[in-house]
Length: 170
Image (tube, rainbow, N blue to C red):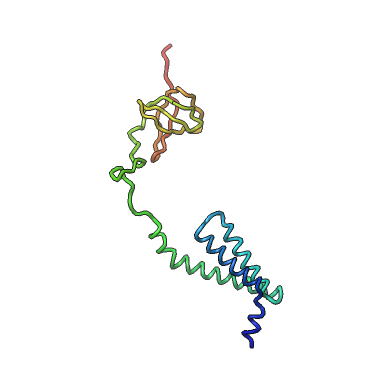
């Protein structure tokens, strides 16, 4: 008899809200974005709780219990599952020149080299180093096209240049 009363509390609207909420949360897991699916999924599940509850106080209590259960599951996930998860998600192989990857070569040989600015650096631009055109950045300053520049810093593939000041004899 109690089971039949429990089923009587569930309306078609609450079942639809529950299914839509779970569906939106699953969609958020497989199509992560700005959290829109997840937010609307939680709103749908909370609406399901309030539609099913007999009083507002009961709805608030059930919502509180719902969030406590979510926090417990999240804690279990962080403590046990997440330690194994990154090992499967991280690429352990190196991308080397020998394997055909071109963006991994060491650019340190350019330190101190001089080149001519091909495009206006504001602060990013292109510089010709003896026939080799490379993308470079300045330290926030604008450098006109045709200016002689010198490489002052290299971080991975980021090449930082500054204008080369030529001292003239008077």
